[in-house]
Image 1 (cartoon, rainbow, N blue to C red):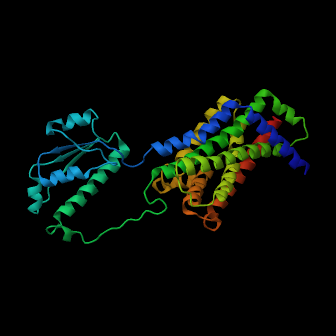
Image 2: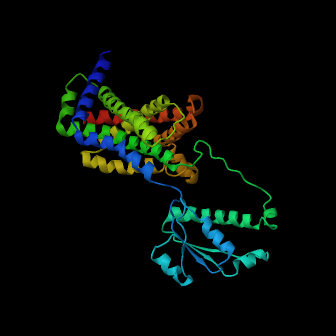
Image 3: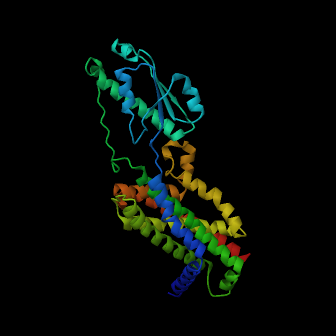
Length: 372
């Protein structure tokens, strides 16, 4: 009980120190409000409002029908231009897509030949260029099939594909981005809060005061981890309720309580990592630089930005040793698919094992740094 009392009082000291750090408090408010709302509401992963120019050399019913098929919100109304302006339009970046419908296109189509449509793409706008070209191809195929249904073209489609989108029927990218932003901000804050708290005490000399008290390294470390984890979990809950559910209108099907419990487990691993990095650094600026090559791969390679399956096999094995990989999988499974502990127990076990490993390595390093 005495050790628990020590941890409790040290935790109160950490919370009091955080309360007087106005810059850090302001950053936390920003990280769990504006930094989540703006990307989720303003960023679009798919094709949206893409600019299109069209060179209609055929001036037929089919060419007009194809031009009219490109509609908002995916595409802007196509702008007619002359054939001679294709290269200049792309060089000047006026339009992302320039479509050239050749002369005699409708006649060749009705004659059973296979006429070609040229789609010129400005691939500097990589996301829209890659997806938009596929969108245009599917739209044109649909329109040509509908036009040819009066003849024999309809019989050339032996299979009809029906797609169903589960858990996000309208394919709203903002739903996923909101949760991933929370995950990323939790990772950043968990590492920075504990690391800067330890280094701030070392720079101000208060860590030496703690060492003359009947306290152990384990008590000091648990107090820092517990207090900072409590603050981040509370901010996460507020962000889910006020920003994600109310402001963004994202329907969360899963248990918020289970997600917060998993968040606390994830924070146990990340805060221990922050303490470990702080024992390697001698100042807060040095700690900030040391954190960059650790945090950035955790964010980019955790499966939130790029699916794990698209990475090289050796990199997948490496990233399975990162707590962020399992946390991203747990977050999406719990919040969107309403997965329970019986479904995600393997990720929970892996996250627990990684957290304990990080904790004991950080504790050993912290003890050595205190004795030095």
